[in-house]
Image 1 (cartoon, rainbow, N blue to C red):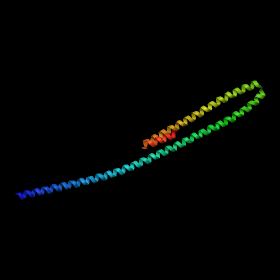
Image 2 (image 1 turned 60 degrees about the vertical axis):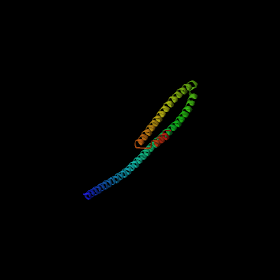
Image 3 (image 1 turned 135 degrees about the horizontal axis):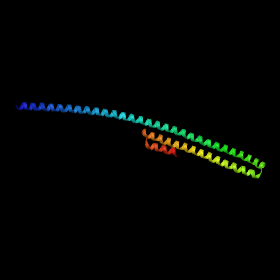
Image 4 (image 1 turned 90 degrees about the horizontal axis):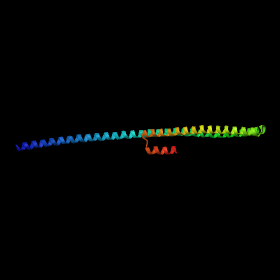
Length: 174
């Protein structure tokens, strides 16, 4: 009876060892599966990050291109302003020559009246032109600043590095 009991105990122990070994094998297989899933997840995350960085870089490049276009527009407006200044000076010189001729022909009193009227008209014209140019430059500058801020906000929304965006903003709005 003791031998039977020892045999039963040994069989139960062997069965328990076999069950434990099976559970350990299942745990090892589950762990290997989890590690494989984690590696796949890391690869997928790295690919998503690379895509996001590429999109951010493209958004920043597009923003830079828009800014360059706006800067060229502003430079064009400044050139037009300079041309208007030269034309205005030519007109003033022409008006001065004509006024001198009128002074000789019409006499001192009439010449003074013509000169004062002309100078007032020139001053009004000059002030009006200056106001128009100042308003055009202000509008262009406001549009450029709005586009800079919009483009940088889009870049931030696309995942761009906030420090890089701030550096670009500081450089472009300076």
